[in-house]
Length: 379
Image (cartoon, rainbow, N blue to C red):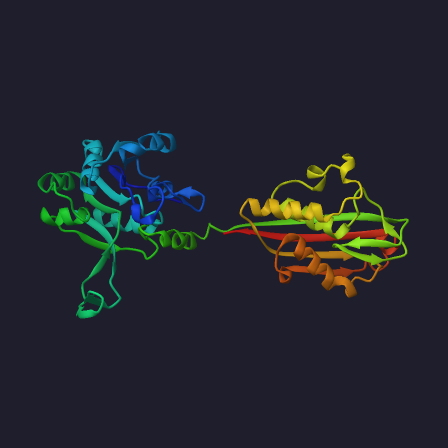
């Protein structure tokens, strides 16, 4: 959901700065949980009929590629005030009110925007969100030299809203740079109402702010769940391979590879979480090179594929369904072996067994079935 702005209300999103303190490319263009900071900032104003995006000349090509059609894109100036003036000029005759927002504030909420609009609708000539200062304030240089009273102090935020003609005139009267548009409004004698801000409406400034923003978004975590199921029949032999452990038995398991039913189910669970099909897609049984292959090859491939896409294993649970052999004495070794193949903590792996109460093919001791679940996470 986005705020549906009243008729005549426009927005300016400023993004012409270089943002060097955040490190790397300009902060407004950097990725934040899968989308750029600037894209998230613009999203908040999708309910406005007119949105002007102000960018650095070097970024004009990228801005046109990413946002053309949805917003009016103009080139900014050397200072923030100059950039805002460029945006205001683009709105002349096109709006009655304007909300001016920093493109580096990607988490502005509907409530914050609506609060500014409500104040303007109620008759305030200007309105801006802010948070009261609650921390103690010190003066000092290396050591504390004094205490500053915090009563009546606020931390300014954006968007800051104005009657378009009044803020345009304020910029003409005071062309010098200012901390924000409220400073220019006050210099022009325009009273500014304070509306509720939000602690989440942070301005991306330093590298650590990206991690904080991702935590606030909560969408940074990509969680995938996959299930796997496999069956192999008993045949000639004197042992079986289960979850990477060789167990003596009166029969073997029949399969193209080593027929490790537990490892196959877990491998398919990981592929399933990645939407990558099953083992047969990656290791076709028609290919003779996989005849008798160690199933660790398959599981390691699935785990590596997950890692290459930024996922870590949250946990995996494998259930072996059989009347024999007994799994309990070997469960811990299976857990350790699976963990070693996937290069994860054994505490993230569960291996257990159950019978089918002598029902079905497993109950008749014709084979073994396995069910597996894998949880993948990307932070």
